[in-house]
Length: 136
Image 1: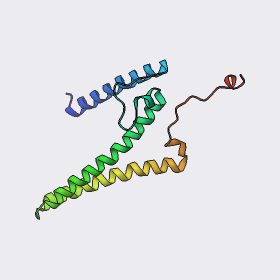
Image 2: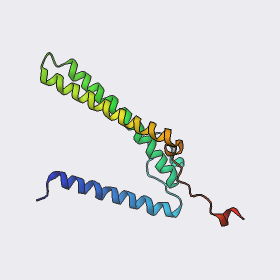
Image 3: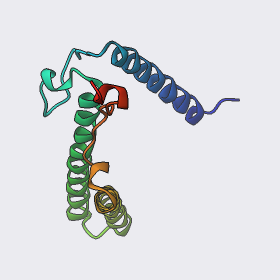
Image 4: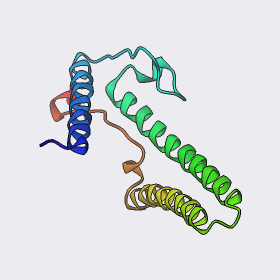
């Protein structure tokens, strides 16, 4: 039998395939106009596929930091209101620790990529010119 986790994973993959398929189809036409811009950018900055991926990458990094701050705040509130209940204190410490671990993992991944090659974190998906185009 299918478990709930398997069904959720299947729906996630199916959704990803539909989104990726529409992006690839629109990328081949050269221009894509989203209905809503990714927060922090304008629609004009997202008309091409490389710019869209760059905006999405920046939004994911930004969202990760905001969600880590939010979870640390929730953990701090739970810790402050535990009133000596050791199970609630442990739960609050777990939430804070997991948020910090996730934040450190994201920042470490960015740092490693930036040290290896700064172009890895500065997304540029433009196609380089071929030798026949450069001779013209």
